[in-house]
Image 1 (tube, rainbow, N blue to C red):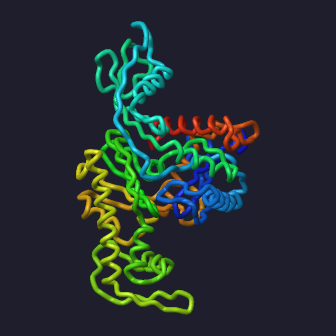
Image 2: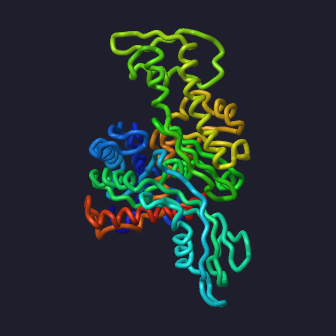
Image 3: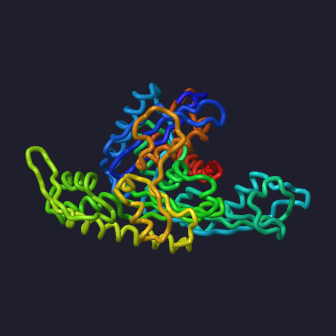
Length: 419
């Protein structure tokens, strides 16, 4: 990436598919124009975490190659996603003395109090991805949203801390480095998707984003302008495919065609037979059997999602409902199913408002990659070597420094979340 480039890149590292989006930022604060998109099937990941390095690295390289050819731009840096049920959020608080009576709270004070709040809250084998301040208290004054520039002596914080297991984070970065890409920032998939599909009013009122991936389903809850909770359920669309393969006694490839072409989440009016052609063979199945299998797995997934909403204390209490993204959100009538099971308004989310003539970019499975690209737009001048040279080698101290920068970039993500 050239030093003064106005290109932003997001790479969604999914368990089954890698997706890359390249956007061009035209002027300060301008909406990005999508100039390159690439995708590739992924192997070597299990439920959102890396199981071997070479599979995801090859898929990243393929997806980037496709996006580079479309955009005419060589990608060296990007914002990438992290996923898996190891991602958790906990509440934290802390207090510091900020100085004499005439001392103005500065950014160093805010960073220091974040460090104080996280000490002892996050185990040594975890890396902090997000520190989301919910409110500050300055010399007894409560509910301060931003104390920067205020005068006082005693500063307190209440915050939400999102963390991931350090080995999974390191392995994810290594796969990107093997594809010759350095990470500006590493962000949970569901938070990146939220960046692309939510409006500020929804974040203020109360809303949840549900990212239905292949083997994971991420849940992020927002209210009063802040991230309140993040959780990941270890089940997704691939589980439905496997259930169909077992229940219909057919190959997973045929089961996937059945799921994509004929599965309906709820409300099918009649029972009929459907036919799937696989090479020279034609397979016939009953919609009653398909519906029974699909509904059973969706019930399990959404019961777990409801459990995450209960942990957040927001089950049935989100005025703006839920927004569904990810490949699983393409299932017919999935919003109706979510509305019934969660007792909330539900809709399928799309990454709208992005320019460009790229087909399918507004599909829900591209929401995460588009959100990552939008976040990367705020990082285009950070973490770069001279003339775009890589600053980190695998296993080196520079690589560890690069990972630390990526984590710190993620911690500042919510400061750029406002739409």
